[in-house]
Amino acid sequence: MSVHTQTSRMTTAKIRQMKANGEKITMLTSYDFTLASLVDAAGTDIILVGDSASNVVCGNQYTLPITVDEMIFLTKGVVRAAHHALVVCDMPFGSYQISEEDAVRNAIRILKESGADAVKIEGGEEILPAIRHMIRVGVPVCGHLGLTPQSVNQFGGYGLRAKEVAEAEKLLHDAKLLDEAGCFCIVLEKIPAALAKQVTEAVSCPVIGIGAGNATDGQVLVLHDMLGMNTGFKPKFLRHFAQLAAPITSAVEDYIAAVKDGSFPSAEESY
Image (cartoon, rainbow, N blue to C red; front, side, top):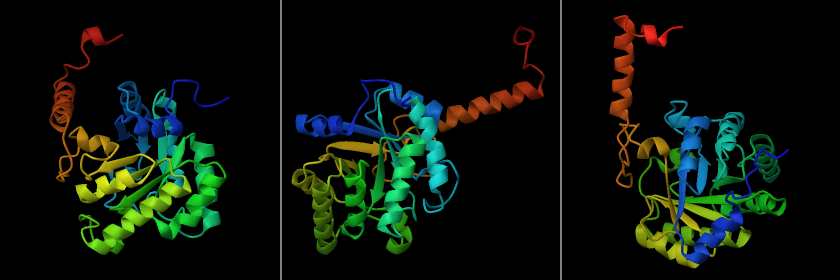
């Protein structure tokens, strides 16, 4: 039996059609069943199980340490929650760079074991053979260009990418290659808004931005960041749509105080 039973769920074809219709696409990250249920019920088009789980869930400084096994485990819970959204799983660092065969094997494993609808992979022309092979054997692929966090050690940080002409030209070239290869969408991270607009107009597949201006076909944010749960991270592109860190901390403090003074559980809360 299929994990997904809802016929109204988003598909890669529907995501493509949204661009054709001029309808903006919404993407948010989720890493567990409970929060993914809320994100899905709100009507988000795509839920990304990002390798940002390495930071948000595991507490690592970078995305690099998270493994395929861990990504599959997290994605399973999100898939069970998704009755509407398309679920995309990030391919973690090391799962596609070694060889084309290894990349395809890991992509297929992720779809089979997690139930995800598609994978996301960072990079352009350098990994094009693997992307083409994935798509050829039936794995839907979302590309990712610009600031690619798995290359943080190579970049030397998380600064704005494609500021210079040469890198901007390469990014546009890579986007066209990903589009021609059959990627159903491309994420552009932390690049100049004018370049993101140029890319969006140059490719047929939807372009989803994060720190890439408002001219893209959609937007993505890390859920914990946009909910204001991660107080130590506030880049220019991030808008807090809620401020949950303080009320969550306050609720936990109230719980601790109630347990300490013996008022919880009360008689009414006891059997």
